[in-house]
Image (cartoon, rainbow over all chains, first blue to last red; front, side):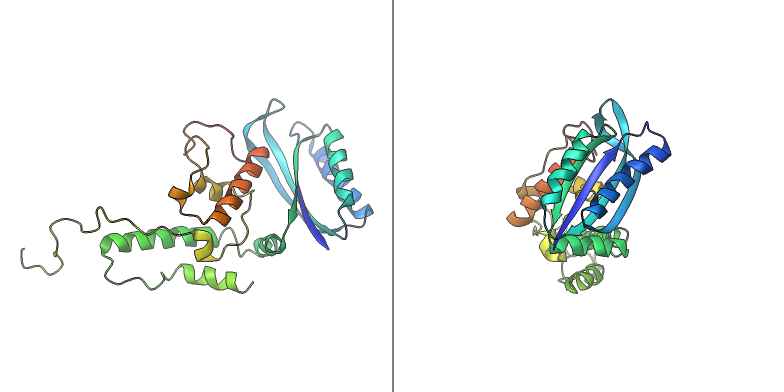
Length: 153
Length: 88
């Protein structure tokens, strides 16, 4: 079983229905080829970091799927390349950590929880360093839950 | 004033001493770097959108390479810029 993730940017000029149907096309295509769609992430309208096809924003879609063998990828990429509604795409093969990460993210373990904690822990350690490194900081309290959740993997 | 216990040094003794760098991925057990997470990747690039060296980020070689791949993927998808000015 191989896990893949394809992210693509749809032209924002299209109407809402057209955008949805674009995503649906590829979903159906994958399903027809026997892929098991794990999750479709509609990241929505985002500002692009640089203009693409003279557009400054795009609608991001991220489809995660698993399939027995990878011959579908070339077909999928060809279809994406021919599609004028798609501005950019990227296909990634996920390793087991990537699959785990996406799983955790969906369950809300990553993202909102992890990063603020990490930042705060950094600040903690910094302020402690400044305060004086007498108490040799036996692991700040903040990173402990993160490490715990991560080690369960 | 002079008898206060909390004043032990005239100047901050930590000035000039190097803080120990560490690989945050090893330390926190992060195994996968998400290329869609722009805020996280911003920590590894400078104001011009260039990758920061290991010398500065403290990453281990293994994870520095993965950070580089993630940043390049993000650039391709216009999540991060290839070139920028005053990114931060």
